[in-house]
Length: 259
Image (cartoon, rainbow, N blue to C red; front, side, top):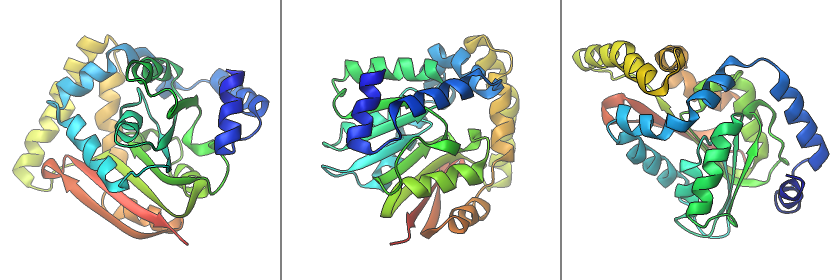
C-alpha cells in the first residue's frame, strides 16, 4: 500500500501517503450502510449489472467514455469506479492513465483483479476514498467521469465541487446516471420493473435484503435533467449539456471547467 501511494504522489500529486491512509482508515471506521451494502454485493455486482440491464450497461458506459474522447498521454479520474469497468474502458482505448477511486474496498479488490487480468496495472491505479474528499491535487486531471455513482455521493454538491477542483482548466466532467423515461406508458412499465421486479431479482441473487430496494429509491431522489445540470453550473462548469439514452432510462451529463 505504501508503494502505491508513493506512485500516486509522484505522478498524480496526491497528499502524503500517510495522510491519505490515515484519513481513509478513520472514515472506514465510521458507520456507512451504503458502503457496507456495496461491499456485501460486490462479488455478484458485475453479473447483476449485466442481467438487470439486459446488457445495456456496457453500451451506456462506452457512450459515456466516448464523451471524454480519450487520447494518449492524458490523465483521467474515475469516481466511484466500482469494479473498474470505466477505468478499463478508458485504458484499453489508448495509453492514457487512469485513477479509479471508490469507498468500497471489496469492489476495489475485484477491480484490481480485473485490471491485472487485462494487463493494465501500469496505466490504472485504484485507490480507496470518497468523492466528497478526493485525496488528489488540484488541477491535475484532463477529465473525470462517474458512472452510476453520483447518486451514492453522501453530498452531491460537495462531490461535484471536489471533481471540479481536481480537474485542469478546460477539463471535462462526464456523469452517467439512471433516470426515468419521459413517455408516460413507457415510464409506467419501467417503474413497475424498477420498483417491483428488479428488487426481488437483486435480493435473490445478491443475497442482500436491501441492496436492490435501495437502487430505485436512490434513482428517485437524484436530481435529474435540468436540476442536475444546474448543480454542475453552480459549481463552475460551462457548456453543460445532457442527453438521454435508451428512451431516457439513463442520462449523460457533461460540462467543462472554466479556463
